[in-house]
Image (cartoon, rainbow, N blue to C red):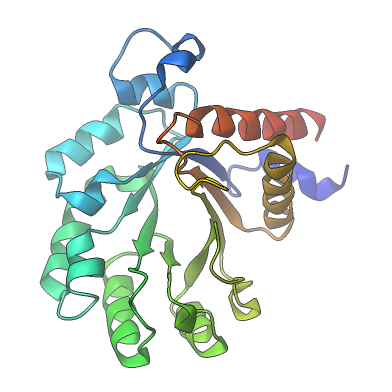
Length: 257
């Protein structure tokens, strides 16, 4: 065991494992407390969650504040930007909408750990539009930002260099349309987003895949990077058991460090 593994015990280098949403499948209820809201029960066991509902509709500042106060101090939220910004406006003329969203989600305060910018599959990389958007986003918040592009034109040195210059990391998604460019490897955060494979949103990940995720996270820790792993294979209830499996592996590593 290398000394770098002790970074797992260093609160300055954190690992965030969770699911897209905090629903707990019925078959897993015995692993969670019986009392409390859905979020409170989830947060008693898992250390992070990705808020996907923010993609579909706005939430009041008071709602974010309530969520903030419902979870332990070390718990962290990732929040997905609204589709009105990313998919409908396609990053054009979104300054007012972006400011409104950041104003709302900022009520998570210190428990807001990341912002997710997922782009539509048809959105090609346009340097002028992308730079304008990310410059404005970065002026509004210092929270870590990751981008999940889904058009091949974003997986180029030019796009990677622009994102790196803005301090924006790539989402390392599964299934993947292309490898994350080498130019992005220096980003300050690793963000694994596991949608389920071979059947997207449904398939459970085998143990060898979970082990590979663990190895990626260990490597990120050794490099001093924050690491996220979010399971989005929620449709058949596989996200929670997969997250618990990965978390158990990481806890075993921490115990041995």
